[in-house]
Length: 358
Ligand code: MRU
Image (cartoon, rainbow, N blue to C red; front, side, top):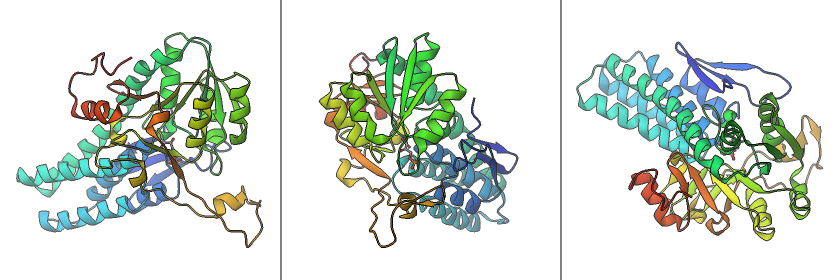
């Protein structure tokens, strides 16, 4: 499996996703600020991977603390959590992972644990977040494979693969799950301007796996669908609001509208750590705006003139009406999402309930 992120002693090691596919380099983060910088600068990206990185960064950061008393240790922990939370605003997995680490910390304090015992607890919780993410992706893959017909031609947008998670992927996990079940698939990867996660990362992953992959520029998706060359769309998510409205990489909304026009099923694959029941709908999801240079330049070459105004939102919101199903580790959720999301998050009833699994 692809080595997206791992802990080696007190260092967090990540493959540098800015350099792929040309170079396979690894970044070694020794401190929490190192990890925060890696998230902010897109060394690591993708909602679940960002959450895992933050958790490991907190564990490694606190491991280095020289504090001897829990009060000072708690103050340092709070500051480190704030640093992590300031990196990227849209992917809710980041805040979910920080919350889990905070809960673990509080449990340690309540149990009267020493600083060293709390450090051990944080280590275990971060590793658990990592391992659970891989398990969730595999479960999503197994459930999601059910909606992939044999010989399916699947369009995906951005990178929701092993690189965007602790391993295996969400949308690409569904594709891998179908392949593992013996289905033949062919994937169309939107290049995903401006950061090119589709061309650089999705294509790199799938080609490595021997899955047929065709890269298209984003403006080709409509023509492809009109020529009846797409059977299914599967994408990932950065935040799913309580009503099912879904923030994902900029351009996803356009793909969803095109899929609806051409009656092509459109699925979102995401772990429940991406579901934010505190956000009622898409209008309340904070959308990150990134540096203009991502739009004006590609690989150092200038595409747009000085003086042109630039708008660079990193994500858009697909209204829930366009989403045929949300593939999670507990099954495939169907509309009305207000109900199915809440039931899945609350884990009632069980994951194999046919009411929300197709
Ligand atoms: O800006 P990025 O590369 O972090 O955006 C990533 C996406 O939009 C992914 O589709 C999403 O995080 C799902 S990853 C399983």
